[in-house]
Amino acid sequence: MGDNVEVGIYPVAKARSIAQELEEDLVEISPKADPPVCKIMNYKKFLYEQKKKEKALKAKAAKVVIKEIRFGPNTDDHDYEFKKKHAEKFLKDGAKLKAYVFFKGRSIVYKDQGEILLLRLAQELEELGKVEQMPKLEGKRMTMFIAPKKK
Image 1 (cartoon, one colour):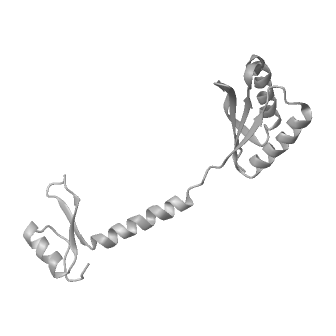
Image 2: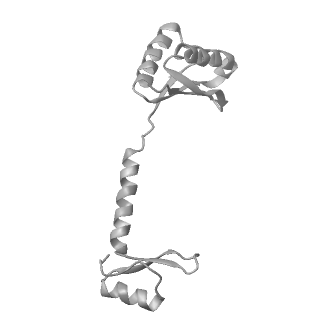
Image 3: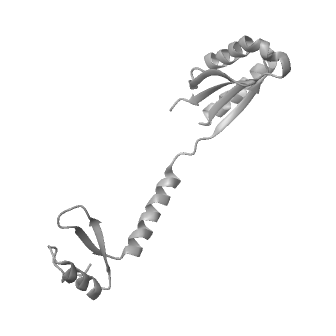
């Protein structure tokens, strides 16, 4: 804004003519105020700066990565340990973990075994992450979420 314009209360016509002299826009800041508050500025530049700020904030926002590990209701110990190592790596890398037991066909009768498996996993990963959602049965899947602990 030019140095020759004083801040003050101007009638609308005077404010418009000042804005035209400076080749700027007269922008209404607070329409509910009495009298309404306006500002002389380059509106296109203002919008550009706003978009730039929003984009910078979006870039800084943490992107949540969710890694999945699938178990069967009768997963044996070796497979369990192998998958647990992967789960540890995912949590150390800062990703959320979605562990689920998938029940095929009639294996749904073993839903208690599936829950025990997921709770065992949660207990063994206790120092790396905290349980965000306890095991929950949804259709043929029993799902549990574990979030990494902050360093």
